[in-house]
Image 1 (cartoon, helix red, strand yellow):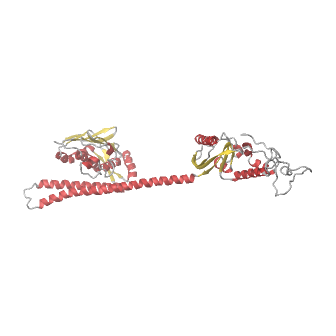
Image 2 (cartoon, rainbow, N blue to C red):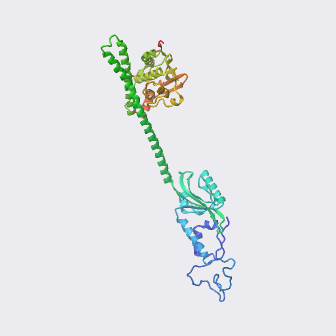
Image 3 (cartoon, helix red, strand yellow):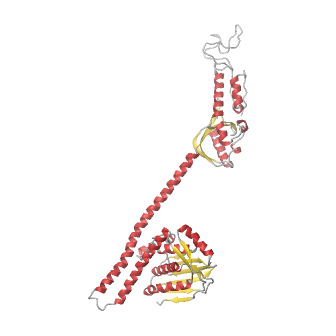
Length: 495
């Protein structure tokens, strides 16, 4: 930048005061030649001493100059005073203003900064200290590089950048958001000699906008969940109505047959079996609804006992055998040696019943369902595999959701409440275990449950940790001092 050289009289108090307040202005910006001209009322005489026969500049006798012309190097009357006044005003404004104002040269080096800029970005430093510095001495490299690119583009194109929202990043202090305006700095001839700009802190506004946007997103997501729950509620009401109506219709019909005096000689045992089967179906549905209610309200109680998992598996298979036989489905159980485990036997039996009944229900006649029990990597592993219709990939992601029914189940009108797998997952996770599914629409599905083998405090602590977040309460009863061999069984239902 060219340095400031003043000619003429330089002892004016106004100019000296302005230079003392912010000397970087004088060093950084070229100021046109100033000819002293004291202000005064129109018609007043100049205080300068005049020699008889001479005229003070600007008061030549008429006719000495051509109309509309001035002597070379002269300036209009009062121009020096106006320049001094502008300099004083700018110096006072920028030394007291809280606005963040800066002036930079063509290389984006600071010429001058306002007091507000100093307080915001470099508290404790002075304007003189910042002269010649750049944004790289104040901000992070990324922010300073972006600002330098903006300013060089403004210098190249000569167009301002107005009201842009920027994120200012610092070293060792929180980031901030500002609204910034950057403008070309021009000299008296209109040539660009740098840039100047002003920034206003809008961090509170941006923070509030982000909070509102976040709240709006959360509200939208909540509304979407409510709509989904409303849809699930409608589906649940329709589903439960069907699940209740179908067995009740069957029960009522067979009871009417039994009471019909003309029904002599009918197979009353078969009637009683049908009534019992439908009553059990109703009982399971009510039990599932009660379980779901207890789980949601935090009233579900796990009663951990030293349990023989193989024995539970045998009982679950035997309970499902009549259904499998009616559909000519082969039902196998293979249980190796498994130490006794601290679990809630009632809930694990419910888990096995859900998985086995689902496998039988979704397997066509003549298919096969296999139940296995083993120990792998210190965990008890329960597996239920079938040769059924399988689960498509899109449905596998949602099968553990409440009331969810696969497209195949809906299309084939396979009965069910959509709660069995939700309950199964809750039981497994309450025991500190995991449940996964592997399925192929061409080869059936396999559900695998892994339960920790640890007895005593380690398992109880895992259960209680789950309970703290899910509302499940865990009790430990009947602890066994030692583990006993499990039951090895092979069961097969006839075709």
